[in-house]
Length: 299
Image 1 (cartoon, rainbow, N blue to C red):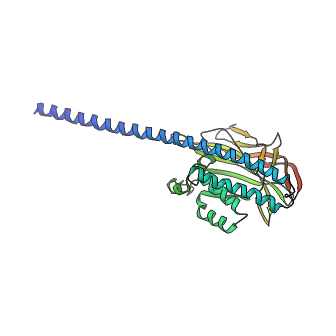
Image 2: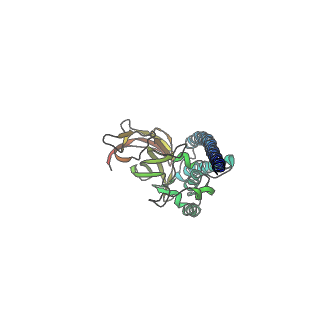
């Protein structure tokens, strides 16, 4: 009996080792597949971002040439020209990468509104769970890096946040109108982006943003301008501990939306205060407008 028990024990031990080996192999395979998927996704993110940056440079150059000519006498003409360029870029991106990303969809909604507001509204309603209406614009609730590579046909696979009822990639948003003369308006936006790293651990980045807009046919739409925030313009974010603060400035460039993103942290932040202002210039109805000023904020 002892002999048989010894043999049985060896068999059970061998079986246990075999199962453990298979389990380890499966885990190793899954980790390898996850790493490979992450590398592929990172490569796609870089390629899409490079494509978008090159398109934006081209659009800005074309628009500047257009408003320098005699056709820039009415805002309807200049805005239509700009939004048409942006829409062409939206569809070009889809053709280039063979899918429609959430950010690409948000861009379409923003720049289609001037030509077909009903269709633009329908698209927003259909995907409203993953979009938010900001001042005069629609933005994804996912952070930018995720939104530019997330296929809208795969949005159903994104896990919901139990406490919020939906995935919120951007939170704690504060925003408002900075400057306006009735036809040209600058908006400010401050908030926190939520990300996931290569192994699925959540991390956060604070952001500041300025949007440039013009009044066209009774509605405010994105409209490019030269944006030069003041050197002392900033937003301050409070972290998880006493004295845990981040101060983030605003980007200076030419465009319709400029976002500055802060460093990676492992905890959520909350905007607390800021000073937002600068000098902003654009051409509307053949006239060059320059708005300048600053405001202190406490949230």
